[in-house]
Image 1 (tube, rainbow, N blue to C red):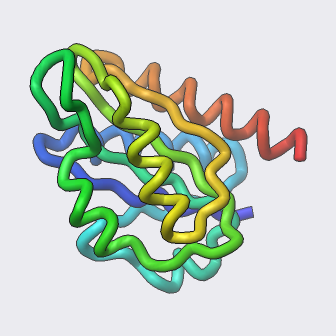
Image 2 (cartoon, one colour):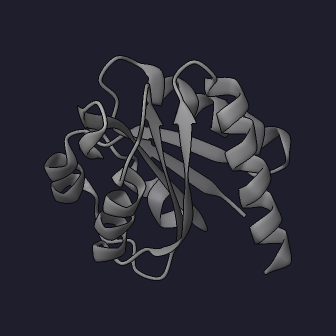
Length: 142
């Protein structure tokens, strides 16, 4: 099994979480590559069994939340037909419907979205660990 984490980051929090996940997946025996949405490693994408897509939460405090640069993610994310996918977002106060919106973007690209997880920016390591633990649990059960 191989994984690819694709991220969109503004301040570096989502990038940091992406590399945290990759390290934890690799430590669990799942070779994992990381790519920015603007420079996706297409070879790694073609070899990946699971694709993890993350973004930061954009919006005004408690309303209007959405994946940061959602239109860029939708335009840059290649077709991932038949690949299992997971989404995540990083946030400060409230992620609102960010995960659901990101799930739709990834679903439109053909991904079989297994679910998502929101990660507070003040606990990137803990949130990344929780996402990886949940993902490994789902993958081992299937």
